[in-house]
Length: 309
Image (cartoon, rainbow, N blue to C red):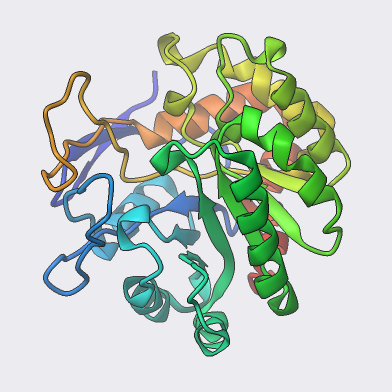
């Protein structure tokens, strides 16, 4: 049994298992967030939840424990299109980090230029946070983003479920020069993924090299012990195209309690997730050092434009 380290930080004390495989050089966490401090970077008034502060120092401690050298900071929905915190974090991290920015129709070209210089390499279309399943509106927003960020060589990262992905496929296919990335396994249902037509669409898009998928946050799609039913999904994605997969921790991990009486302005508790175990689990599912090097290092370097090794 692997020994364990404790990553003690200001938001939650979590025990993270030792990594039980050889971590590839320049391994990257492609999906993590920084929250707060609120007095410096206030949250949007129309946010759907309020997290506790999760600082850059907390994130760097986690990176050290896991043996990761790079990170992609994803703009959380609580900030909307206010990217001041993201720009600050990227400035502090330099070439070891890249960013995914918030965006709306009012985002100016000057702002995109500034974000590009800061290290941003994509924007996020967050449909799932608001339960937005309106395919017509989603396609319009996706096309707007592709048109605006395409000239920068950026990608569009999409947080939605596989049913919506199937409806977005025509828009993706008519934009061959824009890269698209789906969060968290495309939000399929791990217990019945084979029955979901939208997952077949996702697999075909991955196979054709049209999209990347983040094999991240299995707790968002599975209720099985140790997320065992996610393993077959990983196998299917790897078989489709291992060069279009990246990994992310999704740190810090949200967990809104069932039947919660919290309002969007009450601070939510966090979920206790062992991120060392998450990486070890992925290594067992993949069962190939070469494929792990693709997922953890080489694919992120290509997608996010990190410096060559």
